[in-house]
Image 1 (spheres, rainbow, N blue to C red):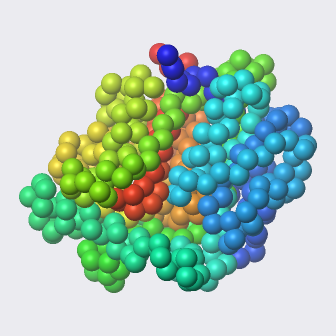
Image 2: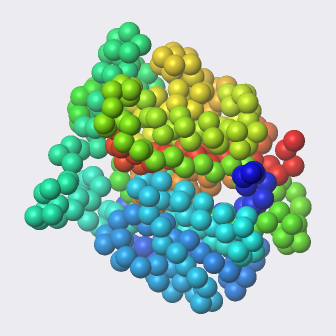
Length: 402
């Protein structure tokens, strides 16, 4: 019977580049920036890394389809490197590969790297494929804002909530993220904005305005993982951080082909989070988690995610949000680093960037945004469209938790 990987894998080092319009860097530069911090934090030398996983979604825009740029940029010692891609959960997928390899005993020390270089395309949104005979047959005729905007009427209809109430809650989500991002020197956007400005911003796809949408940016993040036993031999005796659970759920077609899904929630997030809680031994996530980092590609996504993760009652997220439950000084801080809203979303890096914040908070290194006595946190990645997506959940915490 499978028992999961709870406390079988320790994170001994993490690094994160500054996210933004990094015109001065290529993808290799961003990886080096993140890796230098990670390696110093881990206190090991590059030859000790035995295997690596590279998360890269848009290969042509960043650095090509193969994984060879990673060992060449970091001067890894001819180790196996696997390139992975899983839409917006690509960074989390890299960490999952490295963690599972360590848990299985395939290697002692592994690296997970995620990177994306998107701004050089000159396009305001995520890159699109060039049109051709094949692409015309399958490309969805809808934008990401257009797809996620459709959650809004489904949600208000289901829970008898007015459009104005929903808009106020979404504005609070964006306002909160900017308040948090203003305290983070690595965030792309570090500006505070008022709720009035958010509510009166230009419309992108009704009812999503400009501040309801995350930006596009360049960035990289990485982690070095090993077993807790090896971590202790390396001198990591205090505040050791281990992975409590990693779960992944992909749409199987139920949302698209049947009428059981009403468009008001993300089915994969509900499934993956429940599996993750069981693996981590969590029965009451609202009290047992100290913070969460969720995939706020759009403000409505963060809102329904609070319910998908069982952190708000169904239909209760609007009230919880406007009452400040998920603010920095609330009962369960969410996206304390600014989230996708203020970091932007280089797909290969985002999942690892989220874990980086939880890791920093547990170690007490988060500077002006540091919370008190952080022991355990969750990250949530959602990739694709609401009716066809992948969800990745990672829970990390202090290894000595009971």
